[in-house]
Length: 221
Image (cartoon, rainbow, N blue to C red; front, side):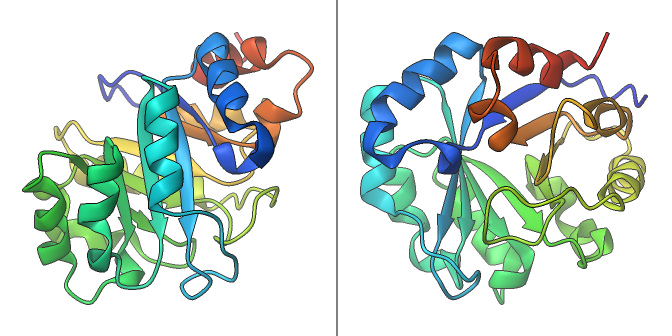
């Protein structure tokens, strides 16, 4: 296990909630002991699905004090960053593959005083981020192909996480994973150096979400 010195955060994916009962879902997340709310914003262009936009983030902000972890799976995210920050996002994560000028877009986020994450798809190398590690707060490793919930975990995300943690050295940067996370694979996920856990089906379909949240944070001890 990597001694990265970072706390482990659990971020339920609200994409797995009942969209007609979002306020209840947010309250449930608080009761489970979640740290962040993972908000997957999809535009139907960068990924083959459409979810929700700025207004939904604004409504989430009215209904919870949890950290809003906004994952922009959109083409040219720089067009919308200011609006999502105004809506109440605490963390903005953009895709390395979705913006032409990654460094400029990172600065656009940081200049607003919001934490910045960069996501990479399963087939994208971690080395595409080497030059910007000093400018970001988090790397999101997609462990499934983005666009839909409920997909299986892609195992080589673990090797990417280990190599990324080595590349980071002493930098205190969160590594988040999204896709196919469950109680069955959480131990090897945590051992790889990942410390921010996105989970949708694993929590929303659990018979005991509070216990599942605890397992996702600490492993099967």
